[in-house]
Image (cartoon, rainbow, N blue to C red; front, side):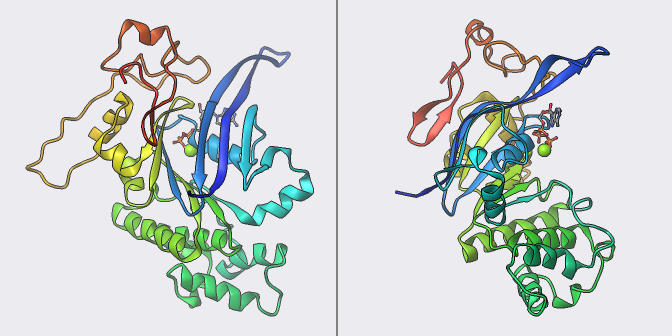
Length: 321
Ligand SMILES: Nc1ncnc2c1ncn2[C@@H]1O[C@H](COP(=O)(O)OP(=O)(O)OP(=O)(O)O)[C@@H](O)[C@H]1O
Ligand SMILES: [Mg+2]
């Protein structure tokens, strides 16, 4: 049996909406509305969904960069949201977050060596004497040359910057990394290189990932299990092979149909969804996807479909299943 590293149970994160000149709470953005999944040791778990579906909010809430509204998040059996400030600080190096944008996540005035070395010194992973050596080691591990150390972020391309950001997260020898759209701002050719770097690091260091993307094709080669999100909830969760070969939820099918096929003789029937993703402050009744679903039935607007197991390790939340 694989060992569970992270366990998320019925997690909710609502952001209050205030209105009027008294600033009263008039509603909530239900960014994450009851999400459960677990990630095993050494696993790369993909979280995929459209913009605004709640991916970043999940990533940040599980690492307690946000306070949760309700639910539990356990890391190595310990409830992260119940930790004292001191214990949370001790946990920080083990869990790292790679932010969505490689441009704003590096301080333009800081040399690369300092950007990577600073957290090492702060957490006592290096001394002033050996920090340079440790930074060089990690820079090489992340596929860069050690002469990058004395240079500044503006001297690098997007792909190289992303390697630097990854190196900074890896320097602390984490067990678990949340990578939030780490390749979406990069050219397709560079994306593959960065995905390979994530894959190498996972093998070399026995790391586990929560890898966030709006693009299924990005997680296909890296992740062994994938969850599909829609408007704050998981609608389907399966192994990569099962999800790609036997998708069950109409939303997953639509996302898969949007992936371009390299062979022009193979035609894929693209499923075009009508309308935009509704507002998470006022999600549709019943199944949240019913307003855009090509297979919508009467029941769909009335009853919330449960995320249930339809085959071993394959869950889907649809009345058709
Ligand atoms: N601090 C906040 N205050 C209020 N609403 C927020 C806050 N952060 C996120 N939201 C809202 O929560 C919802 C989910 O946002 P989130 O950033 O998690 O989505 P996402 O899936 O990461 O989207 P993207 O692909 O664009 O990064 C959105 O409607 C967003 O506007
Ligand atoms: Mg996001």
